[in-house]
Image 1: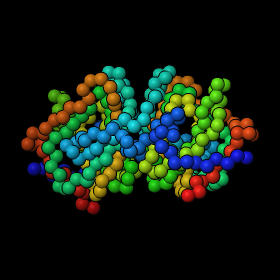
Image 2 (image 1 turned 180 degrees about the vertical axis):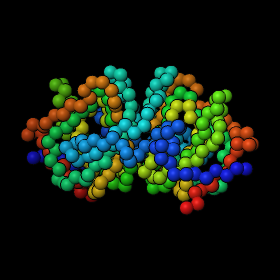
Image 3 (image 1 turned 60 degrees about the horizontal axis):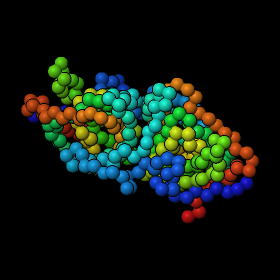
Image 4 (image 1 turned 45 degrees about the horizontal axis):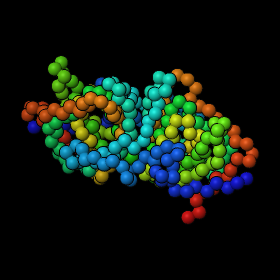
Length: 168
Length: 168
């Protein structure tokens, strides 16, 4: 099984899949009489298809053990999904671009810091939450509404991968 | 000047003003093959008036010194505004109900834990972010769109208050 090694996530290497929610390089605005900096509009929340609306939830994930076999991906065809970590643990993001048949192509893995959230664009194939180290919570902004917003795809054997932690 | 002493925030004592975003008493769903609990739909995000849409930002606030004179409130007439703390500091929420003239009535102060976010309902009078102890960051979900979504009101002298920290 091929090995998948995460690289540090950045706005530019993740742009095909969505946004990195972070203060770095953000539009900064001083508000509240100088007592607050607003890092403005860090992700494209896209949930209005088919009368959808945004909801806020908390996800609490148990830590995975590595190497982790990546055997499936999922996607939300009707809306984006944003995760922002609430604790001090890094986490791992596995995504894939879609081929002409709409199915996942090459898998990519990213390592995100506790100061980095991610927002998957609508329809982007991704693995369910991969927590590291300890039980981790995330604030999640996604879509509620009519229609089936979850597709799951079981990877064929030649695309299954063994996700390892970065070596540094 | 009257003294304003915060009480611990709860879903029930804050219901007139908005929601407390917390796992306690939430609708829990097991997802991701049992590796994640989803605490589902914890706040009413209400940002669609006048073609508004939801945005995600990070606010970084400097800690206040107490007692803090509360001399103004603000409100967002076109949308809700949610705050979730990203660090380990508690914070203070000051709100007021609206009178028949639409102006703030009695001030109320609440003390929120690092595991509690708040969502101000559309149009609720509130004080700008009040951080305690150290520089604190919050994930904020509010509205972007046409129209003027900020009203500020300078309190008359008899409503100005001196906000103190809880005594316990």
